[in-house]
Amino acid sequence: MKITKNPDPEIVRVVEEGLRARGGYCPCRTAKTEEYKCMCREFREQIADESFEGYCHCMLFYKSK
Image (cartoon, rainbow, N blue to C red; front, side, top):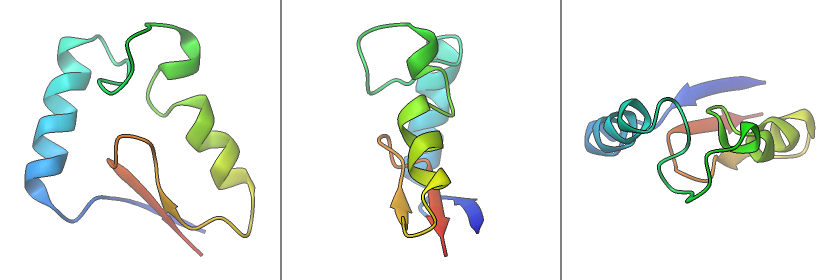
């Protein structure tokens, strides 16, 4: 398993700005709950699945097999 940031620097810039503005909470979500603290629970659960390959919800991180 390998987790990398999105290769598109513009996506990384926008998402990281959003994370800073929201105190580390996903800028793609409206609620500020621990569930949406980056790296969000949804993506942590997805990467726990060995068969999963893909991006997190906000497209900042990518998990490859």
